Length: 258
Image 1: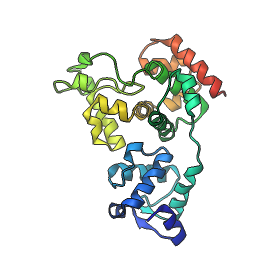
Image 2: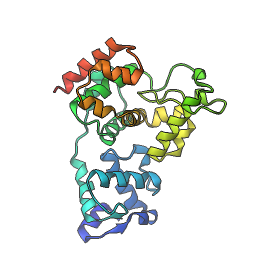
Image 3: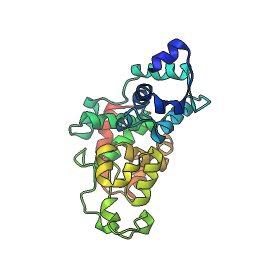
Image 4: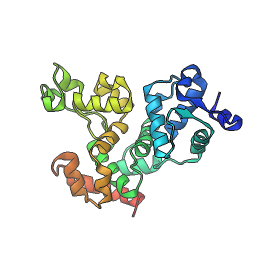
């Protein structure tokens, strides 16, 4: 079965029934990914907590009730997503960051912007410029240092030997520490996040950064008209690299003006 069948036949199914219908499950997952609610590696035709959470978030975003039901109305909304453009193109991304981006990375970036509602020009300018600085213009998606300095850091949740290197900074905003990896794993419903920095940096280079952005209520700060300096203090704890961040912000402004 496909989403189009639900519309054409006016059918409603229990979300849990997707366990027995991998075709419908994969069709749903593909459209949830287009909406930015599911990472690309979540499109596997297997129903589980990650798909359930993404569907619930979609229905909440659309102000729909009955989160355990997939009916013709919801299917119609999902099918319409094929016409929803990405928030940023490959050309725009490469201009701002100054380096090439792969198709999978671009997909993760657009999913990140949609999922965490980084979807106004001020929000996008700040997120893109901060992540551009932190990633060296997409040159690295994980911390260059070994991570040994994080060993034993209980404030980061690093309570086991080897946690420092395993959970060092990953993604464009350097998600760091066992505690924060676990929070991200719980949010995205992907236990593989706890495999550590290599998995996160490859699978969720931008979504991991978007989770930090969301968890620290950065959109609200952007909406209040915060300056690059103010955003930098929240991201960095100081003003490290401020001139570079401002330079990236100016490039982002060219693409996404007020």
